[in-house]
Image 1 (cartoon, rainbow, N blue to C red):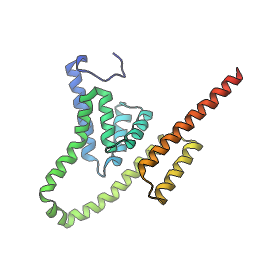
Image 2: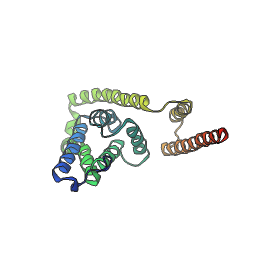
Image 3: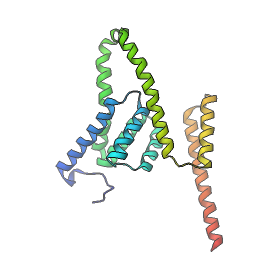
Image 4: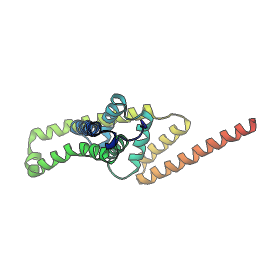
Length: 204
């Protein structure tokens, strides 16, 4: 069997369902302990999926984050769906997606019955203030990890600075920013390959 192919039921029912359970529990744990939305999950997903379980390489993680950010839906859900699909096909994607979404769904569903009373509690307000600070730290940690793993060069640094300035100083629509960066990346890499090919051809 191809080691890179998703696990299928025909590979053994016990092995397949054990894999589904592992996928579900892994992302359930991430969904339970992660506050602040998708970006705060990135560091936890990378720790469990890349560092511990070796389900993805660092390069694959960076690629899927780029795709997940560029497509509709929360980045954490898109990443979970990709991991599940790679490991066990459609059912794997379903297991990871349910594991990620279930904790927040159940908590919000329960709170919705008494949200007004919940918000009026003094200690809850204090807790939310503390959580907001922690969320900022988690997001900053995710940004640092992504920056460490991304390929660095004059081109990437210039694009990063340009995008940062655009985001800070203008209200330019984010989807246009992503599309423009994608186009720039395609043109740049094709240009580099063309130059390398021309130089190699001349040496011959």
